[in-house]
Length: 496
Ligand code: NAD
Image (cartoon, rainbow, N blue to C red; front, side):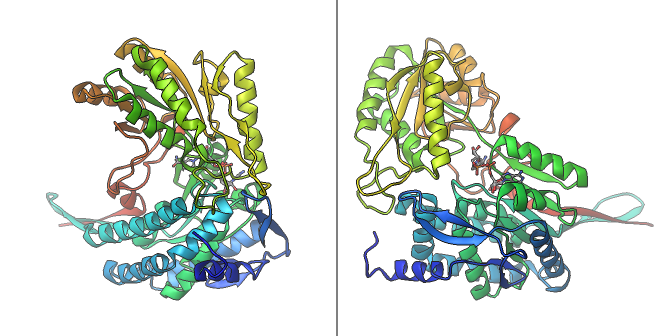
């Protein structure tokens, strides 16, 4: 909760009062070379928060050069894992200490409920500490038992790595992305989304405080078509990671292919929840209502297709409608709010357009949804909606990215699986049943990177999280394998 005397809010306001803010390159705060800026707004009020540099190719080049210099000369890459880990723990300490400040910045910039923003910041800390721990235990040098040769493989950091981040979990996703890269000894250039650049800029303040060498962490701000495209196509990067929509992911992959830069893509989804007739209907409805309203449904791995056994379909629908009608839509920093705004006017238009298009194609609106108003706040609010009908409907096939679920009944396990797998995406699904043998069987047959049982949105550190098909490629995040992705192998051989 924030009050006028709130010291954390005062600290956040002090940071923002330096608008136009600067980007963070080579340990310095810099404007764009042509002086251009853009404005980031509070989605809950539509009011500008701060101006930020609108960077272009030359600025991005400056950042990649700074990251390259830091990789070669700052000692970061050559440090022992323990020395680097000590510095990164200091960064994690700074982030943890400033969690209330960062959460207030994030909540305002992204339209997140404050408690959720605090959770995101804590998740950044936990992710960084998880990868520090891995870096201490991974064997970097492995002698090989090869007849007639002295042979060793060595795992080394790649060099400067680029990261393009979306607006739905700005700070959390920076953590998921840069933590393995930094812990492995790489340097990073981060391009946050234009709607939500502020928490990533504040990371620059904390990196400086923690004593991370200049140029190890760089932040360039700007639009996707300019700063993002320049980063994705920069030949000086040794690895690239993109989190965002499949449409832009394809462009980023094309740019990386021209430079033969390895790329990781974490893209959108259209996840299913398969709900059998032996569940506790009230409890399951509560969990799925919680999932679809969490961050106003702007979650890549959300369950947006609810496939429900016909025997409990009507009861389940009525339970969900009742619960969704009572969700308190409101300003993200108001403690009474349960669901905040979507991130922008553009995103609200997108949600409303899909409701309209779905209806035009024959979907039934079980709960109407639409634009919501919040007294005294001219923000981008929408109401939760439930649709039903044919799964070939546009609203059942495309990612809406709002608090909208599409329902359909099923009669048998095989039919449910067929329905769940009838999608171009492949990120995350869940199965809900009291029969764990059946749940495990269905979980294994759902075609995606992640299957959850009697839960949705579960991300323990150490479990790989990745998408397949239109949802991504390149190995995913959050696991031991992710750390290895940020090391390159080198074989050294001497014939005896
Ligand atoms: P987006 O693709 O529009 O933008 C993502 C980032 O790409 C932003 O930083 C943007 O500035 C940049 N960008 C835009 N055009 C670019 C270009 N031509 N070249 C390079 N960069 C460019 O996505 P969004 O609307 O910010 O985020 C929502 C999408 O992200 C959804 O599809 C969601 O499912 C996906 N997402 C996936 C994951 C995951 O882990 N799989 C996590 C979060 C979000």
